[in-house]
Length: 478
Image (cartoon, rainbow, N blue to C red; front, top):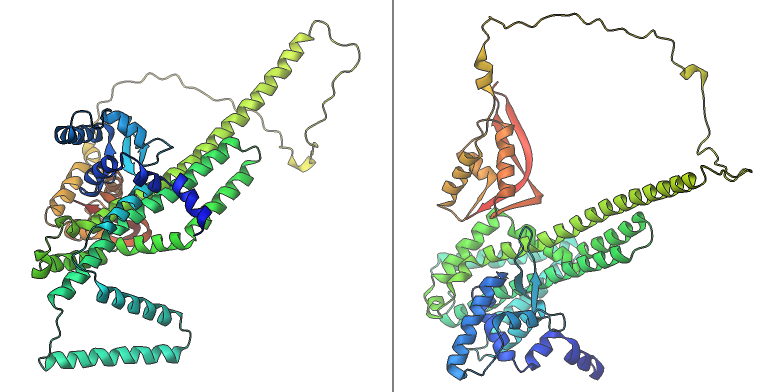
């Protein structure tokens, strides 16, 4: 950090410009109320405009009618402009109404203001223990000597055995209220910080998407070279430290066992009397569901990047075909122009596009043409009786019934995986019913499909044979 670096940040960084703006109290106060307090990822323009009108009305009632004279829509347009960068304005798929979301720079400014607030106490002990634990994990994870690692594990086993013996002797070590509050504050700040980190990860993928679009627009080389460069950049981001950490976090969060464990831990912590005395935010009990929503939005950004590449290939193929047709039409027009007065000498010669290869043994033997014989026959109405039971033996999967099973199962739990649902309601129509469940998960807004994790489901067919299928993990949420 030198003078010039700090001066550049002061003049160009959106977070610094936001904190230095005259309207900073209005912008930060409203955005905190509209996005941070309800823990909302994105809001429609109409909804956000009405909320800002109410917020401005309250300020004008308190501070005077002349304060912040512009309308709510004008403020939102100004805050989402490129020179501001405080809000992100975008159009979600299959909708024509713009939506707004916080930018990472605004998250940084709000987090800095939160750091300025006076805390009840500074938790030094829990953070020191966290530092020791992280250092221990780094040293143990980087140790290559098996004997050293075994010694460390035996030492930890000895500590655990000593603690078990002490508990059996009646010496139960408990955290006091201060230690519980201190650790809960650290958990709460870390959990909320993860949501801000998701916005930064999503912003990085959007930057990659923007660079790809710009490169496609100005590209003059071959498609292969462009795709090689784009996919190389995408692999570099996926294999970066941030990409690996995000994949590990997403895989850990998508585990039903881990989700159930996290839900139970949050419920037990929030029931402790020292924690209840702090008045914790009840939404913290569902913070892992907010992580899922934020992670799914990041996954959708990556999917849009892939769709942009597919569209580029389609557009390039159409443009090449259009160019070929234009060249053919141009040749035809020149030919028509000289049709009545052809040149006396040879004016054009076209070589054969490829050598002609004729092998004698490849010639087909002579075969006389087949003359079909068509019999003249009058079709009369039949009088026989047919077995129509086959019409009623067709397989039909009722997707409404399957959706009802999912809704009824989610009434007693927050999340439900497809193997758990099939355990309660086994497949009755085999593979067709399983495909219908997958189709239902793709259409269900609160369902998540993890292609990186594979589940195995089984059923018995009509002959009594056991069938199995490997499918991506499907999780339905309430």
